[in-house]
Amino acid sequence: MSAVRMNITLPLEVVKTLKRSVKPRERSAVIAEALKLYFRRQSEADFVRQLIEDYKSSSELGPEDREWLDSDLGVGPNED
Image (cartoon, rainbow, N blue to C red; front, side):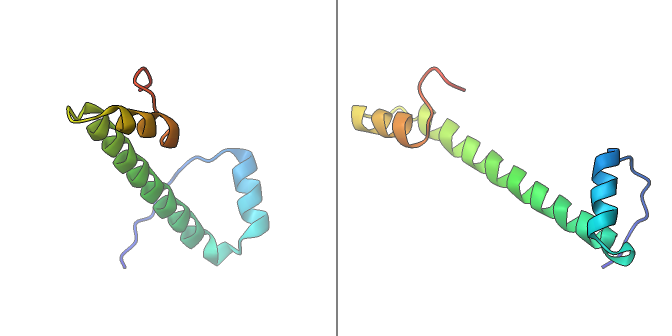
């Protein structure tokens, strides 16, 4: 895997925790893994939001479907 050197700014508390918790030669890998997890979660959240939006916009929803949508997904007709 190729790598690119970056200059970033992090909050002081994050840097202190990173330095306390991770060895110097392992910090880039830890930051890279944290970013991968962040991007994966964002993708999953976007996917779920799209599913909910598609489901809500379906013209074939019956009362049982609406009830399930409201209770199981925590999304009501007035929420976005």
